[in-house]
Picture 1 (cartoon, rainbow, N blue to C red):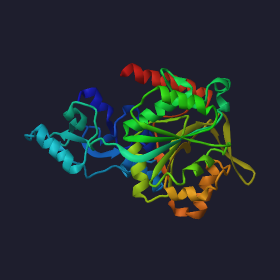
Picture 2 (cartoon, one colour; picture 1 turned 45 degrees about the horizontal axis):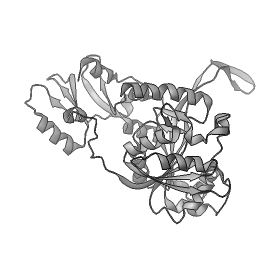
Picture 3 (tube, helix red, strand yellow; picture 1 turned 60 degrees about the horizontal axis):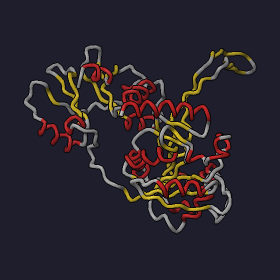
Picture 4 (cartoon, helix red, strand yellow; picture 1 turned 90 degrees about the horizontal axis):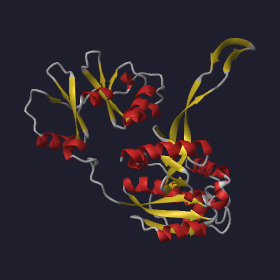
Length: 362
């Protein structure tokens, strides 16, 4: 690993959780290395460490020292290690990155599994999963008028592909290849597009007879879905490892998991802090950290029993129903990184720029 790349993965122990989240997002790597001022390795931190900390109630302003992993695995510079030995160590420990340290414990390099393979593949062998991805593609997309007067929202283009194909491609790269599209508005155009364009995954269609809200169409799948499945909107592009979302859901034995994305909301005003009618202080244009609903969910099939046939129900109402019936089994997967709600014009324009940059890098 070159020096600049290595330095981009190093953080000090007083780095905040929020700063580490941003660093992971910026570097597009799965791990950071916590060091002192002399680059002596103190610990490692990854998405999972931060996620567990957030679930446990850690604050964004807390330091990474509270969640970093101190029992890390290393290889020492003056030891004779071969690629084959490092590969074996990675397979045994299920690690994709192993730091190299000198006799003083200073980090001098990082060995990446992808570099050993000389290609961008995961440590876990890629394979196709049988679980279905349901895409809610029947809405009118009124927030994207006047485009949606002509095209259905799923077919709105981002560079050389419609929105929905970008979404499906990202799932496919993570091993999902069985898609069910719930259709209504301009459904024939959507079916025609996929009929004329051969793609490497399987697509089936379910048609609503009436507009059933953002979740009601799922009732049409009661006799179709028999195992854990994913539900997503047709205007949401989400960065990240989708297998992580899926495994999180299954490990915690949830009936429903909502993927929640971190958003920093800037309040453009001075916020007054009051007590008993008196001013305690003013926070000038504060920034608030929130997790917001991305419109991506992992469901167990039993949830479908809570939706009546042809019922008009939106997803927030369904979530309330599920929570009332199974309170302890509705979870949230804390996510950070790229998330675009393309159903809004501003986000659509950002997505055009962002995806264009990704295409240029290929």
